[in-house]
Length: 238
Image 1 (cartoon, rainbow, N blue to C red):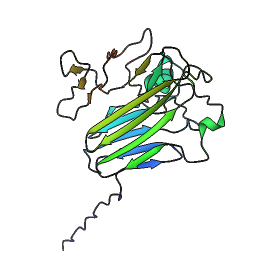
Image 2 (image 1 turned 30 degrees about the vertical axis):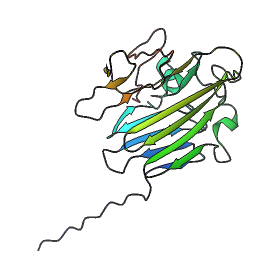
Image 3 (image 1 turned 30 degrees about the horizontal axis):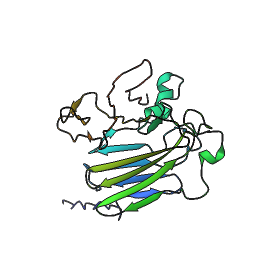
Image 4 (image 1 turned 90 degrees about the vertical axis):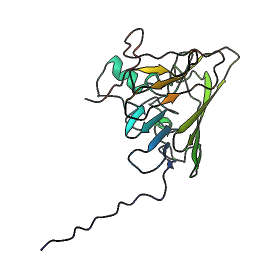
């Protein structure tokens, strides 16, 4: 005698996006389908163990591919690649005068928080919005060169608008560099003469990076560079 197999209907949460106010992570989703777009934005502290200098870093998954990636730091070893992967240089954030974030991991206040993080968060069916600030050192913990504010607007399902504001703490001239670690070794120029680049995955979703403010902007993309600095690597574990 045959038995009817009862299939369980998969349940999805009543929300697509959320903010963890103590960890400082925002999770933004277009849907709960397998080919959904997902945006992660970090406005949190260093944490007690896995110390990465990556506040205000952004990552994007499209259809299961981490197309704008955070490599996670690789293996527990001592090498230029490990240092790169845990530093601001290997994350999707801002360098000031070529220097990365330098929060003091020995200070307990930088590792965990006892109150909800002062960050802006709004989630709607049409969009998610988050905003955070980094106002600690660049290069050295006490080198308070500038304050960075990053706003992220996720227009569902597939547009992410990032607005960075850098406010110097002195009267000097500074340079600011935005780094985007794209999981693709071959990019293409979308419009001749314009600094817009796109990934070239065949049969998959792709990412187009479009700078909206181009006055005085210089841009380049690098893969597998080791000197004068490690740049353009995905330092995976094992």
